[in-house]
Image (tube, rainbow, N blue to C red):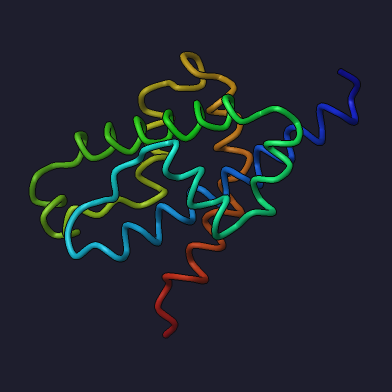
Length: 141
């Protein structure tokens, strides 16, 4: 694989992962309490339906399984992040989880060593995800 192909594959995974994280944030918002369950196949199906362009490149480049693995890992990080929260914070936030909580877990639990490709992907898209989430769910003053 040449550098251009590698760049295209990385860009496709980044775009699709941003879409998946945003979809999960919207699913979380729709719940009164708690967070949406992450089922990789269901997330992929919803993205194919509601954001087909973000998934088209992933499918075209044969990255479906890798993308599903990243979604599954993201779900694991969310689960761990919820477990790390103290009960008072958990109930005060209505069992909700922020993207920053996931980023904290990735660093605190040293995912950069145990899952370097996933860690690199998430940290590379973090500024974009945070900006979009702030725009969508932030409250203007």
